[in-house]
Image (cartoon, rainbow, N blue to C red; front, side, top):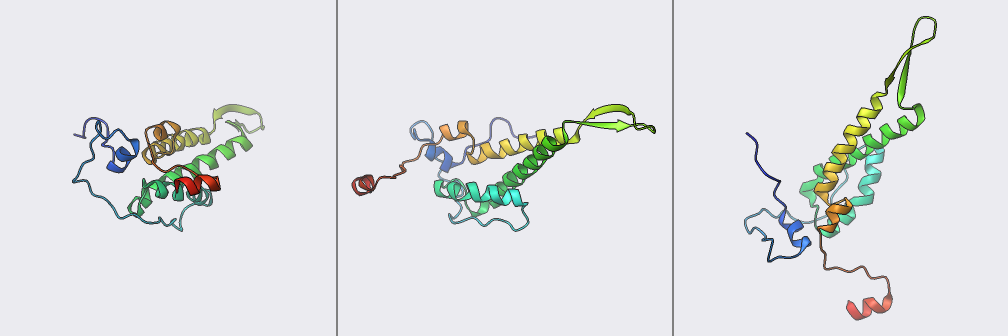
Length: 158
């Protein structure tokens, strides 16, 4: 029988969310070594582009470490497959027509790309929530670092 209840939240995510009095950080939780994550060479071209878009930001937040490479790769690969299915749907349409011997349409059927796009979108969103990549997941994170763009602000606040 599987585990019951929602999945446990990693301590780093709990810490980023703030309100430490209400959420306690487990002391015995494994803490993987921080560092840069390397994009796997076998990823699809679109997946590599998505990796380049999100990996450095997730590492900077401390949400992703080198041990999490496979989770991030799975997210990126799902993104690439979803993107590929959506592009094909926009080019070929959402139905497939089957012809009889006289080249008359016998029947139409939903394109298999619709179910592929749907399945990959669900997987991609599931991974994105785990990694804090959705707007609702980000609202639960709280960081202490403020982005500074002004030279005076950097001087005053470090």
